[in-house]
Length: 143
Image (cartoon, rainbow, N blue to C red; front, side, top):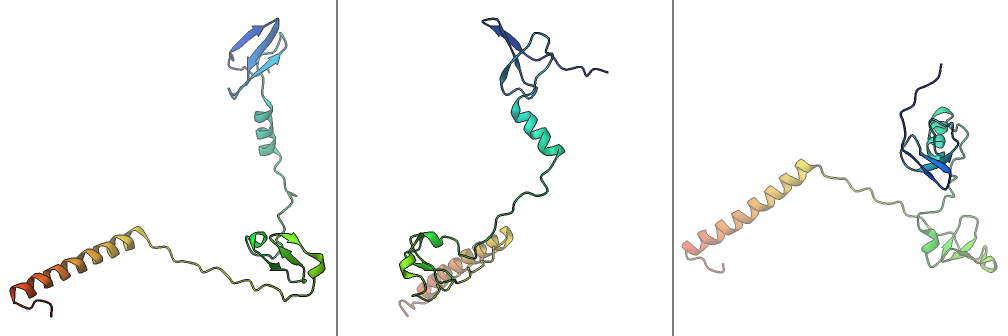
């Protein structure tokens, strides 16, 4: 049983027939009997869905902190010395390893907590203004 394809836009230029791919992203030169065409993008997408990579190589962590190659001087655990990411073999083993400080995790406030804090600030400002006016009326200026 043959699959029926939707008629794709096509044109002829200098005797060569071009047809738009099924995804609609580009035109591809085809033969006279072709009814539909798929571009390499679409084929790669379909293949990736059909055969997912199981043995995809994982990124291996080096144990170095983020941005170590931007530091003026970084000494690895094995004693290798780096100046701005460039290895300095003459200095290997002469310096103690750089101490890596863990990043502080900041607690994110929810939208409700932000609004409550803003409301408390406004209330405090109003209280301060009210106290100023009360002191003015009671002739307690600058006390």
